[in-house]
Image (cartoon, rainbow, N blue to C red; front, side):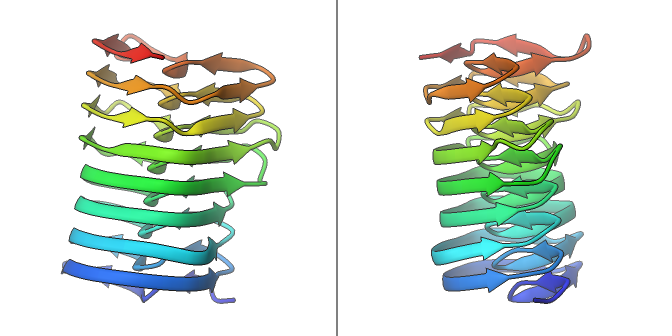
Length: 219
């Protein structure tokens, strides 16, 4: 296992587009993904990944990108199993930048305490729009934040998204977002939600005056 495992260990100031990847297995000891382990100032467009085995790491882990800084991801998809440590997402482990029209269908999980786990993003600092997730998102370790779409969402907007994923957590579980500080608009969730502490059909826990919901529902 290597510390930054992916097709590209790291990239900066690049555009990656129009790729179709079939991945059997990736096992990293740190930041791990299929396409880019660590992306900085990068645009990723029209990339689609099918994982037939699993992608596994111990830190930021994503089906496309492990850690994304000032990176824009659009029109991408992931199918398969993603397993990580502290920040785990079906598409991205942790991100600043933007995410638009990304879909994930599969299993996203962690066994690490206090992990942030999401069907699309584990720890999110990027506006997200027109994204969807399905399958299963889970972490039963203590203090876990698990959301159908996002594990923890900072003060950024989430709009026109939905999740049908089943969600299982120890601390915070949300059909869409486990722990939210931002504005959420025109979203819905309809997966089964299980938590020993805080659980919500859309949001597990809303924190702060900027944490708002408009035109959202759970079914």
